[in-house]
Length: 102
Image 1 (cartoon, rainbow, N blue to C red):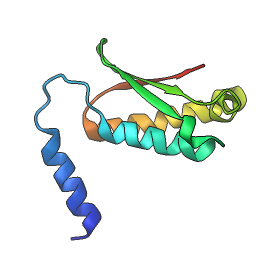
Image 2: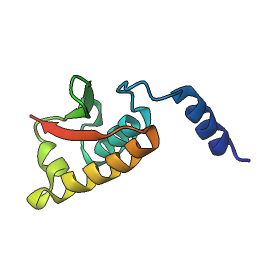
Image 3: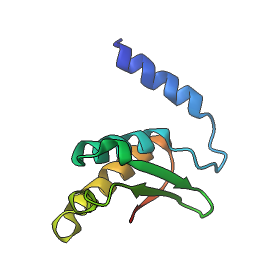
């Protein structure tokens, strides 16, 4: 068993039972990693969580010069980011919506 397998097993036990809470650590980590890799100013990347609704809302903020990189042509990059993050959220057992905020 590799170290990665051990870490994922620990993550599974730490998540506990589904209490309707809005904790999605894997989805947040994937989202921040992908967006940080795309932008020039990765220190300006901020992911905020809004759990007031039924689905978890992840709000992404980047520097003003980097928003175009994150959105992409016709929103293709943004849609790809949403797809990756939703797949990661499935591991967390939650539904997420991703919004890119100016």
